[in-house]
Length: 116
Length: 114
Image (cartoon, rainbow over all chains, first blue to last red; front, side):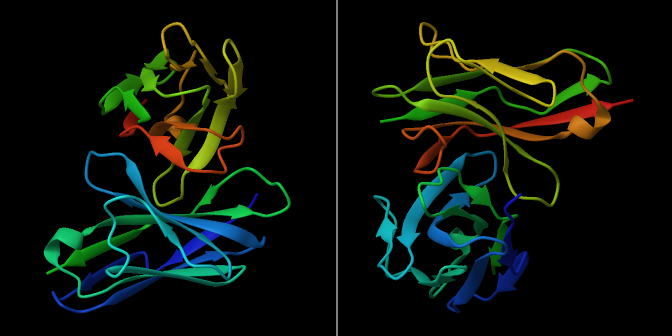
């Protein structure tokens, strides 16, 4: 099946620093990638949708200047949490969808971000 | 807006027991419904889906029936195994394959013991 990887799997950083999370589709070309956030005991919440070569579309309430998304190639999307604060600590999950009318998302294993 | 409610866990069962995880939804229009499973250390995987009322999705012994009248999509399995231990997420989408925005429930952790 289609495989999506994320790196790093967990990261701890100091408040005020920026953190970059990578999402890669390993065996297919992902024309669309999604970024989700999950708080403990809560559901996955979609943060943004990105199409290769285009600006990301952010969900209501998500700060686009804080959560920078780049989808520069068909196999890589990055999420950068800028000037991270403790309230940004969360589990971030990406998913990817292929092109050509393919209609299923494949999920990465997630990245645990802890901001001290 | 759309929302999904599923039973809280953890659910702890003995091997070969019957499993039910309840899921109800609120949505406009006619969504497609999904169950995803997440094994430890892995990404969510599509377990089964149903795209219209009265459809039954099934996979690996798991089943769920799209009930429009009760807005439900409960997950069942007749005899669970230790290897079924995972977190199960109910979700809905406006696309049949779930390739667009997914609305998830909070997830239910299942623990199966010998």
